[in-house]
Length: 252
Image 1 (cartoon, helix red, strand yellow):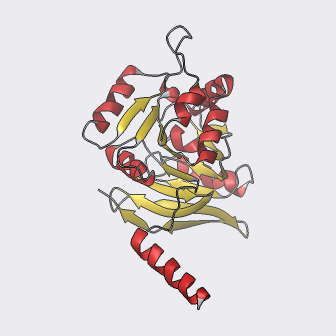
Image 2: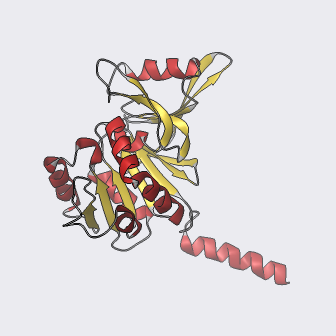
């Protein structure tokens, strides 16, 4: 009888909450292109908070003023509390550490730009360690372009002169990654070639307007802004590349 009651209570709980992701789960949402209102809204929803504090990191563009203004414009009519973490600061004006600021947020979104320079700055300032602690704490992480590539073990980047090259990420997600999968002709074949040669591990690719939610390090679901944008799992099998399109939910 006791077991039966426990089963009933478990069933009722899941029906009433409508959730299969708990607040203690580690959530990371990546998308192929630049930050947009739809994906900001979705990231905020992942926090489960009524008016979440969402912090934007424009490190990859050198704390570009126009990019930060664009962020605040996107957030102006959303039910969130927007913040920006700048790295070009001085200790006279900023009295809180980067870790203190990031750990007080409900979600963190990383913008696009130069991935290599961004990761170097994060390492020098120990922001990479602060982000890892935030992730372990259950703070939602997200981002697109450089802001998606950084979370994986590696991928191709345009951060160096002359041609696309390989960059190592933070490895919060133990896969390779390719952003801008549909917008730059050289990205897709180069990604395939690097996986075939074993330079990159199997991984995930996202069109500019498509993204993937990872929960506890595993792909949970895909979301897209339109019917033309998709996300893919790309892997090597018997010496050939397999590209599996992930069914996406269209969000507005």
